Image: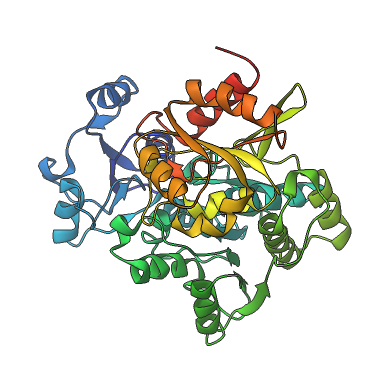
Length: 429
């Protein structure tokens, strides 16, 4: 498959998505130069036969710079190779854009479904793929969730790409048009990358860019920024479907709470637009197994339920899990986002006791103390889990690990953080 024959790409960032994208570009006939700031990553690429070097030093033209989503091209500070490319008018793209170009270049009319939002996008992406499986519709899911977009297989004309799209990815699209797209919700996040809330909203809005009257746009209506986006969508040509999880429950064990009702409504609306039957949708929702680290019950010991919600990397995400339980013992802390846990104040009365960890745990402890919530700053999960277990045995019987923070002070990512909590919850050392 030589869809990119004669093309030359520079690729910077050889993490989870970067190296798979480089392999696929080479498979598609492109000439590829790769770079990573880490020496070990460069060595691994060289071992696979890739040309390694900084694009700015290559002395040749490139059709595009494929920049890892986590590497900034503008704010808070542009990576030097991104600044070099921008100064020369070289397009800076994400690999989802190149997947779209490859699929269309190879003649496939497979459709593209995109899901974004501050919270819930991984669950909705996985749920939509699960529903399409039930409906017998060929599909491949990935991008911000799971496999790198460009590593996904080329689907037939009746296939559907189900892509979870972060704001970092959406701001690097050129031609990708989503036949069906959903924006679930918006709350402050990644403001250092986007400058302010307006910049963040603008990045998220890109999921609806290039849609026409044949397309469907699904929009959550449970927060003010999303409602503003809905008003804008109504000036556009796509069919708009507004959804709200308020006052609803799915009845599915893996999709508890109003937030998951909204996720299910979004997946259902997208699935209908993509040709799934109502029967397949209902079957898919009820049989969905859920995702790890998202309000996932990982252990029950002596009547105490341990719930791993490590994916809650901001306060809004934590609120969704906290709202499911009338009372609970809370473990939280790490690297706080803007605003900390202030927005969680209405849920403080549900907290029997909190055990705080990590970089901003002491600040959380001060805020909870000011609100009269019992708490201890214990520093680490190793200290927090047994203490929370003891407290929950005497109270609600629920230990909720919903950190409301990023993990990078103590763990490489939320997955490793959640795995550690699960191991401790099961009684491990």
